[in-house]
Image 1 (cartoon, rainbow, N blue to C red):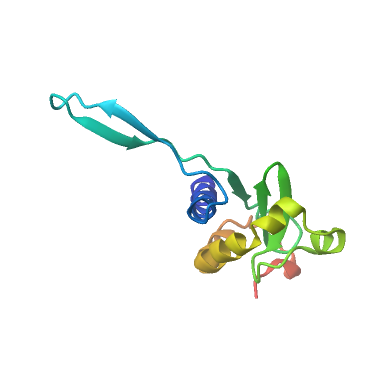
Image 2 (image 1 turned 30 degrees about the vertical axis):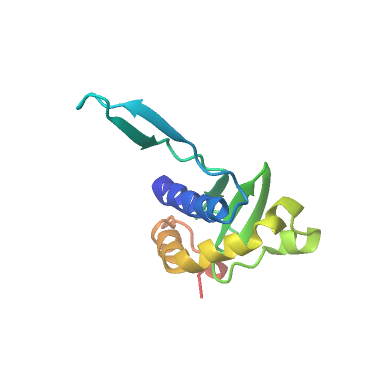
Length: 133
């Protein structure tokens, strides 16, 4: 599950970099040992600025959490709408700034999100409201 969450975070991070919200990842140059004078461009490990988390053992309806600039907001997996508490209290401004990117990441990965959430459900939990419709 951690790999999938990291992949989603990187997907959203890439959308933000591509749209200019985040600075582009730096490229590290190093000399190759395979040839004289060769320079090899190596992409550094991705800097995930956005963190996505899924906790399928929670008793609330299926959702994922997005953390950006030290602020977290929860979204329903079924329609990417904010959870009740977030809708009531208001979505933090940091998250509002990247909402179109969150929606794009969700729409590109909705089926996989549902599949992963369903597959990772603990068998001991039988909360009827937690089924994804």
